Image 1 (cartoon, rainbow, N blue to C red):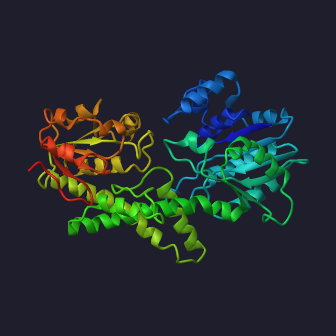
Image 2: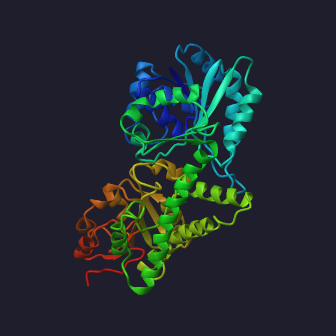
Length: 454
């Protein structure tokens, strides 16, 4: 069996490398020649723990290859003696002038791939899409398939977390297969049986499999992201109540986490969510519901608004820590990526806050273990340092915005010798407040009382 992966962004590269790790011959395709050349040399255009090793290992053996040519896809598939599976991993970002998902790259990929399909083959959608997209893809496949080709579409949504992508591919929480015919009405199709073989090792490890219809499969990913976004924003809304009443949202979250109905996952108070998935999926889901004439998901817009408001509160808290004015004051920002173990700065709360502080007059110095190059390109107006300590030299406040382990282990005592004022604003609520205060610092965090050495 052979596998192709169309689209070599974060999802596509991860999926291609993990399929090679499972023992398949894999050909990845992308229109970006520079990216293809980099991957062919065994290098990654982004940071993801454990992925670089997989790419370099399997490109060296020839099991994993990359191309810009759809003709290569046809040749690669024709040489398969036991079936070929084509995975669609094309990005679906938010449209520039609306909240809808931009499906143009996905539909373009389908139109360009389909004429090169031969015989019985399986096309598998992994991209996150609005409900109803799979039905449109089926029509495109039928319209562009050459004579003798009989492609079957299955929707197999991805559930990757940046920083955990390799594990989430090889040992996911669940596998979802969306098929054209409603499950249970007839025997499983040849395509579904082939796809089960692709994931045979994963399934054998005990990962649950859900076989459903297209619409349900499309809704799983956006529903999961909407639910997680709601959980995050709910706690951050409660954090605002805590600030007014003197309660401690960190202790509140701990107490809530003991309730098995709620759990502690994604129940971390702080500056909210960002990245390339949760914000755009939340908005696209709300837009889809409105197009369907439904008002029931209107609250998702409030979730989005709460998330953005949390960033503004972090800016206000930092200004407060500096005595009400940050003009011409040096602020050290720890973090640029939207989350740790990633260099992804898409919709990063950390960089949003850093830029906002700069806009109100602060001299902002940023340090991140992995995202410095991307941050410099996106925000050249900010200053950058080579380490957390260098960023803190002469600072009136340190603002901790991305929860890298490195920042948890910085010595408050050592930093006391280099800063202008001992103010720490913990935007992620993970630093040890008592340790910082023991060395003369004033500790502030959203939803928690101010703690100081005095």
